[in-house]
Length: 360
Image (cartoon, rainbow, N blue to C red; front, side, top):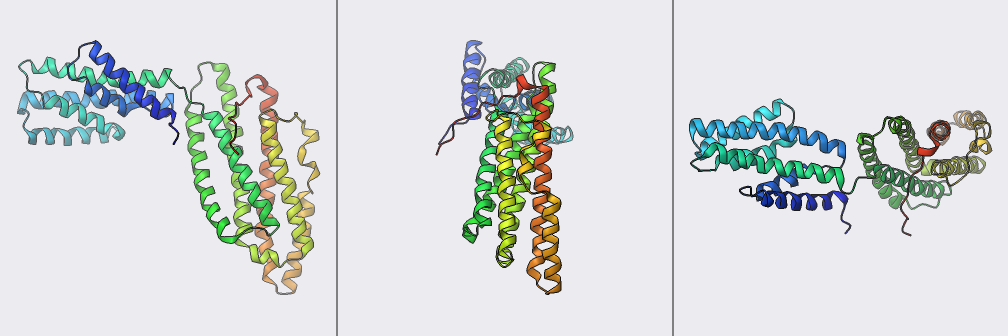
């Protein structure tokens, strides 16, 4: 099992919070450690938003705790009622993710029985806030996330695996149930890619110059994700209409195979070009010029569909599903090609992605 950066940062944050609380001789340093565990986030931006929300929630929890103890005492029923009020206020502010730590603050203060209650309550509140700040500092300094690398790696590996299945499908070399299981896995992988994309989008640059490059990269990555989804749609349709496609003329099966092979090769080369593993090509020398023109492909398909209509053969109609997926895939590839060319023309120095070695 691999330990993620967030796991390590949580451990470091807890250690730092406990150490600082003991160094400052704050009462009950354990609360600083508990607070630190609540606030660690996967991105610096989320960490910044989280600390602002937790400060608000902790002020609400501490303020209600002090008020209720001074007015009603610290009976267990009073603590429960105060917790209900705190939760209601936090929900109204739409910062419900902070409810847990706010309740910890409230209970930690209300259970105090001390002559100088207010001073002791403020010290306990300060202890908890120390944990929140320690967690933010760790998230800001230690193990900064590299979501761009992670995002491209996931897109690249998912594309490679999907292309392998499409090549096997066009050659009728797949096992139906195995492919069905992998299609479900691909759905999960695409969802995970969307999540990583959102995390990469939330990352903030420190310089305005980099923000322009980041914006262009976001557009390219969004198109990469959209393109890999188009290839996934082709795979699903090849799987769904496997038997019907097996009965169309062999020449048409070969056309589908060759055209998809060409488009997938184009897709692979675009990803390699993005990371500078193959040379740049201008718009007049696009890689996909070796593929058959989509108008020609459409004409051939439509002739087969018309023939199937005349012969009352329903298998020919299923070709339209595959044709539409192929045309959409090609359009997305051409658009991705244009976006990559634009990015590399205007932001050549910022367009490098460090990739981890793949295990085979």
